[in-house]
Length: 365
Image (cartoon, rainbow, N blue to C red; front, side, top):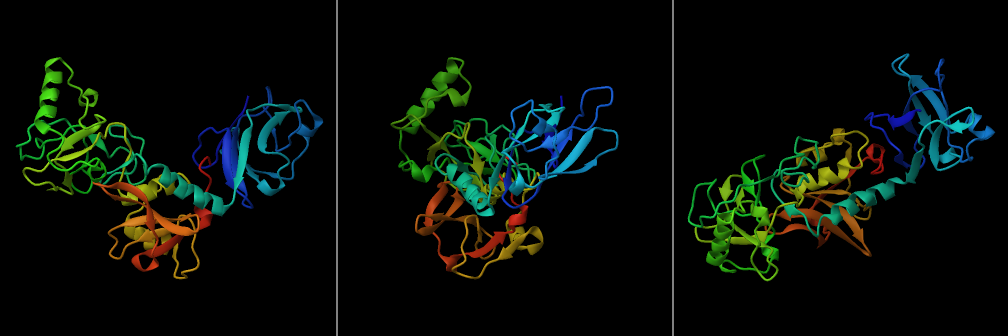
């Protein structure tokens, strides 16, 4: 049997999202049965196997090359606008000889909408942590572009509220990152409705010590504080500086199992899922550079989903999206707040850039 693969990454695929009106490429590894192992007929026909139609040449399919020669790795170009059906198949003697690749066509506008829709899915639960790009602490499932796929890590717990040394400062269920300076996550403490000094810190620390005494040393197994038992104390850092005063404690959410982003990490993560090549990742200033594929947009009436918004001085970045009859911003704001999508877009507050649609592909591509 033969197998289709992504012509760029080489990974095996059974589904591909493509842009309407834009030809795409597929790789196929394997030929027909021995002894000759001849090249298979690649077709978009929807005919039921076996069928004479699966032997016929397809105008939507163009054979490009075998690379390298003798490898039985064949490359094809497909025109989505002239496909006979919704999948690409490799057939031998009128019968299927591979799993088909289901093709889903999207317009560039649909892809741009998909980028910001993805960003908005993180608003409800994700945390902000400087230097990160979407991974859950201890897992390498963030955006690999820029080397940040595993940037967020879980910090070892510290239960001394009076400690002042960085590695001993109070912290429970808190993520940290060392990229761009040592930073820890505040767990969206401004959204928990809890002010400094409440819940009862002494009672919480006592419960932790009791758990340790019973052999439960995994901090992620300890019950939190507050009405829902979901809050954990910490004194947090940003770029090497302690952000809480000596006696102040921030009560935030547990960072365990939560995706963490900084502002550019969110933009990079969502664009990377729709980029024509792997490992997309840019610094904020690079999004201003037309050599990276962006164009500055000055027309106040020319607005599109996923337009890239940058503050003067390159200190912050977000994305534009349409919310009914309004245009809003989805962004990673800060570690005490997390991510938001409810700020109305004000053109005077941002410089705006648009990524060339030629570089964008569907998420499943």
